[in-house]
Length: 279
Image (cartoon, rainbow, N blue to C red; front, top):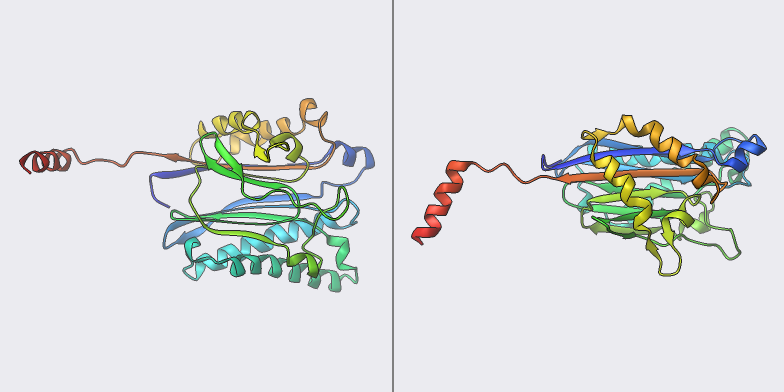
């Protein structure tokens, strides 16, 4: 990645209070990784999955789905892939691979594939372009400064409190993709446990008051994964003010790039200025 684009990132999943009361595990999974150096620099991949509450092994489905997309991204980069070359079909294909791997696991364990049902969201970014994909609810938010907005709107099913899962072949046709997008300055992924706090439903926008303090804290960290924010982020997601608004599992992934001015050679700059004067 261009030395002028220094990324900082952090992500956590936290068990919801309803899961704590029921003694059930956190069914979310998330991961942020730099998966190698491509022709346009290092590739940052952010992935989030939210297991269906009614599916007994959805936490395993979420974890397998996240790992699969990260592996697909790494394989893409290993073979010289540029994010600007990703098309919608190829990116949606990563979700199909994840679904196929979950199907294989279900067959090996003699379980219905629906036991592993989960949503899936991802963002893939290098120095020249960004690409996004989503199936189900939750949200991806991206942009520059406070001008951040949802890339897609959370998908709702036919009935209230329903959505789409990668374990359903007919749902895979609903994968939303956006490729060839501009490289954002800020990007966030979240599971649906946070969408009512982080999104404004009335105008389908991102809530700047939710994101701005988080990005400000992240920008203060050294480049790379912000390890010192792992516990503060967990504490925020498990705080009374958040738990009063949602009892669901919560995943939040944040990444921000610091735009630095290029280093200017003073002698070259003076020479260029003299040339302009002479012209």
